[in-house]
Length: 234
Image (cartoon, rainbow, N blue to C red; front, side, top):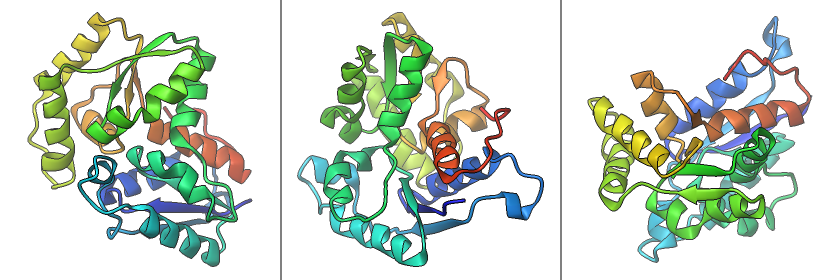
């Protein structure tokens, strides 16, 4: 099997969530059936949204450092535990010698295969404004809708003030209202386009009509690594 390297630290909980989903997505009977995984939980990577808006340092130098570290450790394939970081995907892959799976592209392929025509996207302001998902989806004929500005503020608070800060006292009802809003706009499925969001929704037991890019990326990583998929997951 090929070895997987995780460019992590964006954030730490999301990094652990991706690794956990890689493990759970592997059909294994013993330790040796699992994939050899290297993790660089690089918390020095600057905030991706701030960089996109020109309000902070570019994360590219630290992303490259992580990628090269993982290469030197023996990784054959890389994945990133951050949707927003994929805005810098092209700059990053130019500096790497091994493949880096693209989470938005893998998610788009999944939705296309399902025959979905319109999706809602919950994500950081950076992911939304840069069109990380919209551009990929549009190429496949899939339209996108987003929360109202007020609901988007809540999503940002949830990501930064709760999940990244280690708090879990967020509102169930508010999240369900946001999902209802997107469905009223015609969304057939809703992408949890920030790797912190699946953690929040799982804690609340909310999963109807949701698409988890972290899980899709885990599935793709297991497949490309040459391990056997556990199709009972997700």
